[in-house]
Length: 293
Image (cartoon, rainbow, N blue to C red; front, side, top):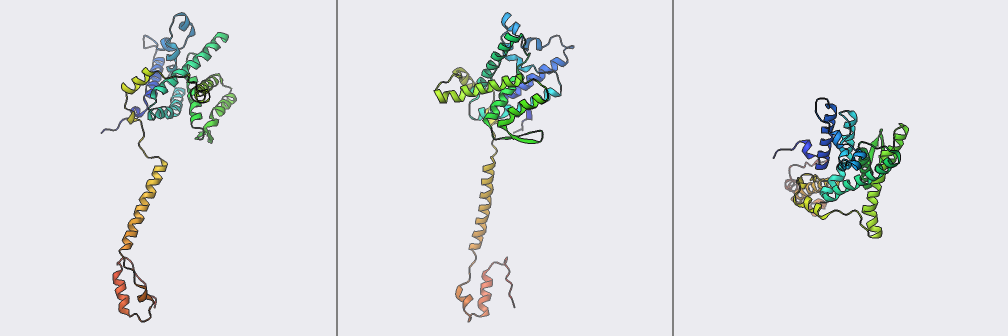
């Protein structure tokens, strides 16, 4: 069986999403040679959304990042690092429909916040990708709070990463509005999805049945391909100890074949040299006995 390329080992949503981002970036860079620009049909514009009923812009704007640049590469890497763990966990637990609905609900929360901002300030962003990334970062940090991450040669826990990121943006005199909206959307999703059903037995974020059936019956990828079969650290340690234990048991079994000399032959002063020779012959030749004269 042929080994797959790295591209096909990436989880499906991340793979298709990052591919769409790169395609749009190519279109932006070579827009003079092309007759149309994808950005004009995909970017967020609330005037066209409400006046011309172009509602797809509320969701397609996340593929509009920037033209090909170093900034785009960093965004793709950052998105892949924080999104991969969540998607693989959803695949492993057979909850991919819930994972897709998580993205939908996050975009709904983010759009509501941006519509309010647009109503009061008459301004809007042409993409909500950075806010979606901030929401995913917040969820990942809350799901794995004790995992260590490296920031400027410092190791910090995932739980403190969002606060440190905001502090860095303030020091660099950058806007933190997108980060705050993303963190708020991530917090609201976790509260409505996990805390509220436990506290008050109310489940507002429901996964549609038809989506679960579609993912279950007509899935466009094999789930088993993305489940890691490598043993974890505890399994590796158990295998190592079992291997050493088996090796020690083999050595003990080999030593059981030896015939130990009787105590009478060793303790009695009347034992002859012939008895010592017979004892040596019963031993295996791998062991050498040194006689002290």
